[in-house]
Length: 157
Length: 311
Image 1 (spheres, one colour):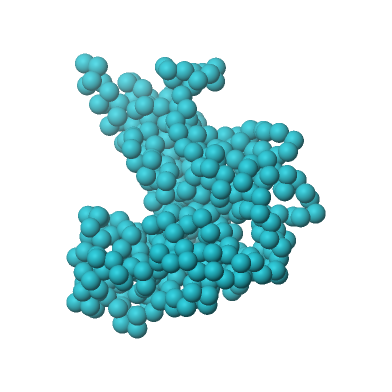
Image 2 (cartoon, each protein chain N blue to C red):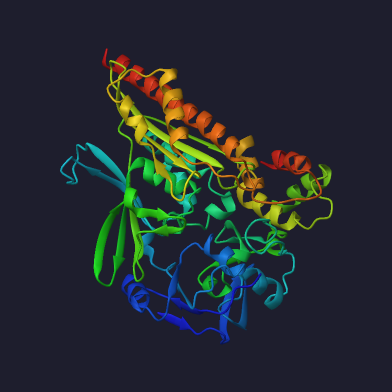
């Protein structure tokens, strides 16, 4: 059993994008804040901070999850991948291309989260239309009206 | 939108978890997937003094079939099959497992309505049941199928039927010091019809109204047994008694409408920011009739297939 008192700083090491990041944090620090403030990985955006908007989506052990609904302190056993890590993935250029050609972004705030979900759930997985809708339903975009994003996701599945 | 401070306690065994929960001064909350708890912490709707992180308890993350005869003894020639789901099984894990066979199809269908893939990857089955949101899909399914909750504490283990498990808004039979460790989901018998219908404003939202139904008909096409559950209508999911009057009778569309009318006349509907009471009443009437007819059509298709196989 590991017992960390409230308001105390404890050193934890997280594995992010194949690197180890060590920082002294409070138990209440969210994974999204750890990534941005302790790792400097600001590609993970923070929108609603209660699991609705999907801007903070990252991969934990390869599965897309919302990093604002995870405690950094509980992530020490896991492999975390952010948009910065995925940008080096061989599948990434095709996703980038599809988003560009289909007007799948405008202001770009929601885009990193959507690309993370797309890389984990859509790329090369031959998803049906309703499955793509299910994946995209986990993200809010206030610019595009979603049609451009759906076109991009259809192209890469 | 940051949680207030809490002690973080990561346990390595179930005994450690139960001993921490037994300390009533600590007022510890269990952290499983956190997909309902973390939003409440972030908005400070919940400010627990301590969190018990149970994510290392691999024994609670197992999933499998349990075949039993009517005496409740595990056997090779089962009358009843249960799905045994550890409290820590992720919703996505159950969704994929349930896709594999017909008897778990209703569970799969309902899970595709739960949140989004990104929350189902992390959210647990036990967490959704223990949270007991009255419009959530898993509590509705658990009640409709006839599930059993296994609850443990330092005092031992007890079993609670789904009918007694949900008590009010966000309130279950789990007492302070106790923890939900496992759930048993009774599966429909082979050839049993099933249907799940839900209405909500946007994909992934909580249901404005959800309905689940299982129905078995005989070769004479009379109803042998039927269960109908409703979510989003009251402080807990509801099992509908009115539908039992159909047992032993032939099914007909008028019967579905009659059941729907009886149910909406008995229940109170409230206005809220999402819908007026008259809208909810109309929606309930339509959705109940639709889910009953869909379950019957499914049962009829399966019974017909069965007859051909035998002939």
